Image 1 (cartoon, one colour):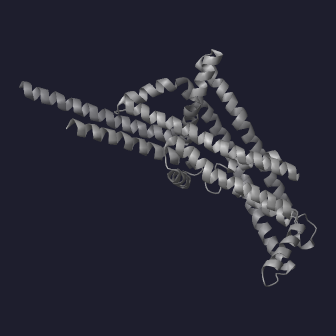
Image 2 (cartoon, rainbow, N blue to C red):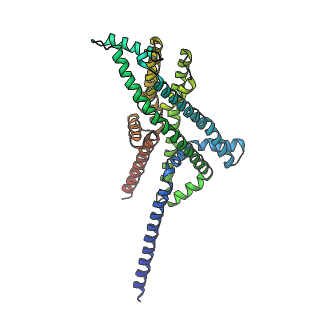
Image 3 (cartoon, rainbow, N blue to C red):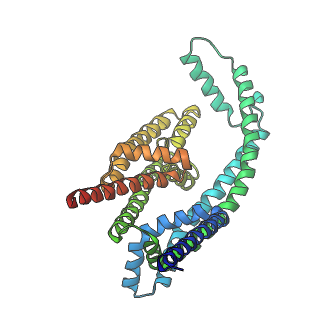
Length: 363
């Protein structure tokens, strides 16, 4: 066989081997995706928290002079105290409140006027009589209220069943989240080295993407957490001064609602204000609604967009659209995924522009 023909044959066989290996790798990757698909959300959240807490992780290691495993365990313990225990408290109270509300609605009899919602109905009837030109009879109002309470009570039964199932699922996902977080904290540098080895990008570009990703995670967690904490503390003070029961539960629920874009804490403080109003506490309802609305508008329209946008060098309006689009496409976790994808796009655009400018200079 001629030498040139032999070289071509060897090159062709090597290419076939490479293509075959790539196909095998893609097939293996596909089946790996099918296996790990239920845990992708936990892994992504672990990545978000790991990148945000890495500076604290290293500071604990240096200050306490301990290894990375011990430092990771300390951070996980703090996370359990700050996130899991309050979350468990919230779930238990939501479960109790839902059961109590369902029982109240099932056992109530609005037509007899003997239950605790009668005062609300009387105030609602008075309010409607003063605001609309025609009179809605109180018996008609009660009968409509019965239909509403039957509908709500039936829905709450399904909600309780879903809550029990989701609680178990949340607990399982949290366990996997902790395992992934510990792995990333302890093996993060090795994983980073492997990814950078496989990536065809230049090391400087890879470092830029990772730096932007880490900065974004820290800013998102800090911005949303600080905004939620401010609203939660203000609501706690107001509810304590009004004598409302279970203020820790309601404050924690307001903190959780603050992570929802656009609507945020208004999903909770507006119904609470309406309940106070129709319960007869009109002055308290106005005060609570006014203070919470002003706080909500400042946090959501001034503090969050500027806090996130300025630190990420992104337009505040773009941040808002990314939050909304992320939530619409991914659900509640979209408050992280939306800005992350936008930041990745802008970083890649920056890299492409630099490469293009460099090529033009060389030519």
